[in-house]
Image (cartoon, rainbow, N blue to C red; front, side, top):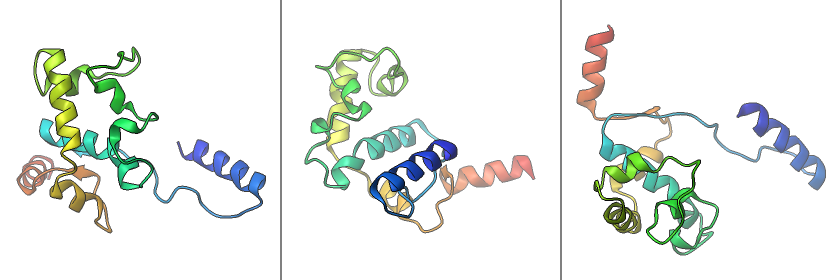
Length: 138
């Protein structure tokens, strides 16, 4: 990802005769403790275009995997939606509707607080979980 980001940025800047970084932060993985946290992160990612004022509703944005989770859209074979949808309901049609309602509720304060921290820890967990891991590792 770093190489792709660097090459893309160089070509973009050369073509437009500008200088500087295009992407503020690097891509990184986040350790997730609970299933509910995974759903919160999925919603946060899907709502990024709304927060960036690119669209008014997440349903309007066509460059997101959000649409693949919706009841009226065709499933993308390459996208693994089964696990997150199963967290809502074992019945796919019900799960898709529940996911859409969940996404339209907006971000939880806990998720917004997590992503607005200056020093973002790559773990989205409770303090008890951190203590348990430290006890096992150290």
